[in-house]
Amino acid sequence: MAAAITSRLTTAICRQFQRFVTVSSHTQPQYATQALYKFHSCQQRQMYDSWWFRGAMNNRAIHTSCVRKGLEDFFDLPENWGELTVKSGAPWTAKQLRVKSNEDLHKLWYVLLKEKNMLLTLEQEGKRQCVQIPSPERLKKVEKSMTRLDTIVKEREDALRLLQTGQEKARPGAWRRNVFGKTFWYRFMEHPIPWHLNSRYKRRRFFEPSHVAPYTRLSLEKYLKNKMRKEKKEKRNQKKISAMFPKKTAHA
Amino acid sequence: MSKRILYPLFQLGNPQLRIFRPTFNLTLVRPGREQPPDTVQFRIPMEMTKFDVRNYLEKIYSVPVAAVRTRIQYCSNKKRNHLNQRVKRPDYKVAYVQLAQQQTFQFPDIFPEKDKKNEEGSVEEMQEKFMEDERQRQKPDPRRGGVTEWFGL
Image (tube, rainbow over all chains, first blue to last red; front, side, top):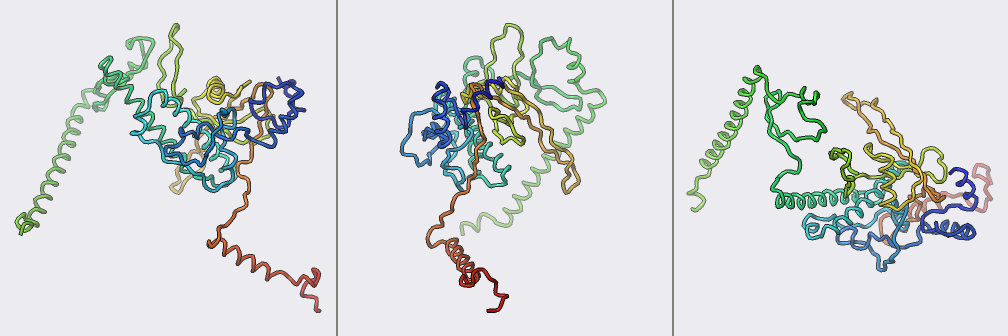
């Protein structure tokens, strides 16, 4: 592998990406020089085709159909290198995403993922060079869009599951009481062996010992007292205010 | 695949696990040390493996991968904040990816110096003009041919 690389390196100065790969050796030098002058031969990023930020703010009038391949996708368009600001639109909202089909959402996820990778690369390089990156708000926009997309997909999965099986939760669980007397929702895990053969599981106690029972009662009392105190305070406050501003004066 | 997800248990005969919408993010970094020309350096999440990196690059970026090597970089827990609590810098995993088909990669210069053109009538333009005038005034008399004022005449 290393020998093959070193033998070819003499002709390749800065051969970048896969689109030049299929040529034979005698044509390599000319392509190598092309790669030197132009970092990208395709002028447009496919993803800026309205798949990009919603209300696409890109000033591209023409799009070529060449698919961007290779490690170029880890970097922005070369025109934007060194700029102070790069225009970008608003992030996707959940309302807009709900209208999209599953295939569209799937494609959008990858578009957003690649953009996030690009922004992270830029951020790291900025830290390395001690330079501020152009438009750092893009990263938050992409993250928000991705979380919203995830929410929509989860909603659809929930709906489908409810219709098909009637299960509300994807992961089964149960209400259990832990050693401290607190009741919590325990989510099941998958095991290859039954629970009575699982020594580590058996060490985890899902019951409260008898000496903890009085404390459960006390903590419940505390919680209820606190709740009552708040409600009483709220009522007293309302009464005081209504005494200060009786209803008769408002209609006078 | 994905971060923070509970993968289903695998037993012999189970179907191939497929994760749609991976949550892994790759960061291409400039290598700190000199690397061979076909090597690309990435920072990857801890949960990713060499196979994951290979599949990720091949499927999503269509980059032919010959070999992947990974290591975990431990970052210090020694620094302390104003409350004398130790502050941990998060660890990260580094992947060295060697490209197939004799491709090379050179990390480009993403922040080239660009000439700033100040618009007419802006404050920066006036400041720039003023500074230029000041500099012109400070310059010594060119007729003296580089000789300083200290020498009389």
